[in-house]
Figure 1: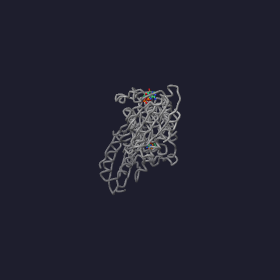
Figure 2: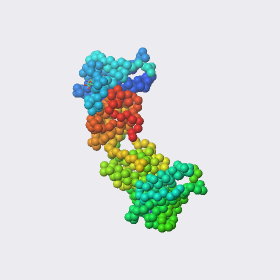
Figure 3: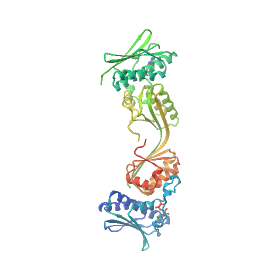
Figure 4: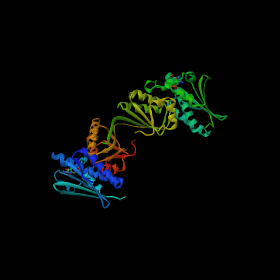
Length: 141
Length: 141
Length: 104
Length: 104
Ligand SMILES: Nc1ncnc2c1ncn2[C@@H]1O[C@H](COP(=O)(O)OP(=O)(O)O)[C@@H](O)[C@H]1O
Ligand SMILES: Nc1ncnc2c1ncn2[C@@H]1O[C@H](COP(=O)(O)OP(=O)(O)O)[C@@H](O)[C@H]1O
């Protein structure tokens, strides 16, 4: 697929999900794997927009690239926000998730959901850009 | 059945229904006809207690008699309250029942339900007593 | 955006009735209604699946509830047995209450 | 006497969610919760049968609701789709909400 560029704003989320969904369906990814891929991408895209751009008073784009080869689908999001590697972020523990809601911080679930939702999640900083890469095998049950 | 005498108070209602229920089941009256017979008797017994005795500051008894013959069950309630013939009482009209609840008087349904619930309903004043007689055919569907 | 939200807030009063309502037990029912009426509920939900008998004394309480709790009170009667349903129908109450299999 | 009556009165807030909740639509959800919170409901009932997507932004609103409407708030989630249910489970929310097929 050629690269698509979206403004780094929340109203881009739906369009990003839509692109990924269409391609996933086209290559025959299961409904469940598709849902999880969309969830992962939505979480990371949200973080780019909110934490990467907005909290740094910056604006910018998100580039979306979808590749299908070797029986897997690979989605890449690229942005120009300050470098942030989600895999370096400390994930919430079991204890966190067992806490009653009234004692939990209100967020902190996005990266956890992302990592759980795809077969492989990778981060690179290349050409001065953040690159978040999601890989899902096609043809799994 | 021999005659049973109950005090003319609301806590007699359950015992009266119980007697009639047992006899109805014994002679094979259908569940539905039994229910309706109990309803009719409960309504009239309530009226005897509330309107016949209580509102006239009187106390007294209700005599219950159940007879089974000619494929029908006949229940008689006798009381010593002032004479009152339910069949002379003006029944609520169709219009009454179609009114929204907030515009309806709160009562006035008992005699209507009674007459609809049994095959025959009769009133007699004999030996200075009110006699309310309920007849239901046994062996109906 | 394919998102749609609908909301509503209301006060509800739930009553479960088990057994037989005659003129004696109707008094307990009435007391409960009076107690609940102080909170001015928007909806009264009666769970009557295990109500086996209701005389006109019970129906009077329903009419009383409507008059006491205000005209806007919506009454739901959940899962009435056949005989109870028939009595509601014979007395025209089914026009003024909502007879349902399930309260949503 | 074989009669038994049970009653309870409470304020309920019902929300029906249809479509997708991401960080954008979660804002509408949050506004609705804030509006309903002013009435201090005892129960929040979310009808989600037709909710097809929920991101962590939607879950945040649930946590917010619990914190804003008070610890005693009981949250019911009625008929979640499988993926939505999985997300609730993966984030431990199923311990703090009631996931039901039907609200009684
Ligand atoms: N692109 C990003 N730039 C800067 N910080 C980020 C970025 N993505 C995530 N973070 C940080 O990581 C934290 C955890 O992210 P996440 O698990 O998605 O939960 P949430 O966003 O709900 O707080 C965020 O609160 C934020 O501090
Ligand atoms: N045994 C009775 N003695 C005197 N009055 C009676 C008697 N039974 C019924 N009534 C009168 O007939 C009216 C209608 O009775 P009914 O249809 O049973 O409705 P309700 O008792 O709910 O008013 C009563 O309100 C009462 O005035």
